[in-house]
Image (cartoon, rainbow, N blue to C red; front, side, top):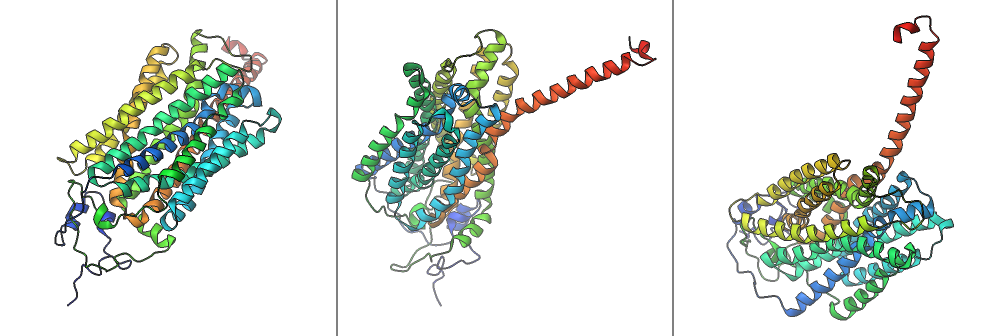
Length: 476
């Protein structure tokens, strides 16, 4: 009689591997086989150095994302854009980003990840630099350049987390992913600060796009020199992490290949049946919708709230005051660091007492964030300080989710499908999330203005008709 553990993962069988069980079921399934020791040696210093390079490149990645929102007023004046057209800038970026992500996910699961990362950094840095020389007459080229930057950054966001997951095990993986994802809010905030600062210093918004390409060139050099050409992909035995934090996997016979190669369609079908992956991706989609709208419009929203309150006067010249972008950038950096650290630490502690700690943390933080942001919108017309405070709390609780959501994916999806899973999560979350939210928020004021005009016109017409009626005295 054959040992069932030998053939456990040789093809697509009805029983999925431990990592693809639904959340909370992993620990139950993986205890079926005899225990085998899994290496827990301390990571080498070089692994931490590789992670540092990836974190630095992630910083630049998200700085490039948020340069445009940092100088939104200047771009509107320069290109004479409406709110709807301005929202399209970020929508074009996100659409290209999300459509390219599955392609890079497929390539990352099958080909050399270092080459893909290097090509992506070179491409998006070059396009960003080129966009700084676009004149106001060719606004459509500027829109196109943002789309190309989105394609370049997709190669990085899809693949880099899987490399960190392959370098570290267990609790260290969560810690290192937390550090990696801290650079999302830090990079976003620095994008605002860099863009606003360069526009203020030089008086020309074009210079905001000329700093990150230099940083990208340094990241490319570090990637070439310090990251090995091939990084060993962890097997299921190394990456099977139960909810309780213990590693228990079925014994493998030496020399037996446990996982057969599968097609991309088979990977997608398998992921669609993984309900932990599906629900966490939908939750991330809601979060992406909010963060996309916040990132694009909050500085302009704060500026207009101050105009309504009479704190500042309307901007009539091309170079506008960027203080709100600087303040919002600082808030994003501070709340992002605190939120990611708090989320990771809360997850690490609560997993010991509750198998569903991760989704509970995400759900609670999203609910509290929604309340804070709603209050910020309500008080904006009367108290700008309260608006800043509640926006800060809203961002803080949003940031709690970053590392936790990714860690959920990494322990419910088998290692051989993780780049594809991340790519699909990017596609869905951006397609239904922040790809549309900047544009939708941008056209709301325009639609409201049209509606108000129609209402006013209708009221004037009704009044004129009443006055000409023999019964008009009834309405006097």
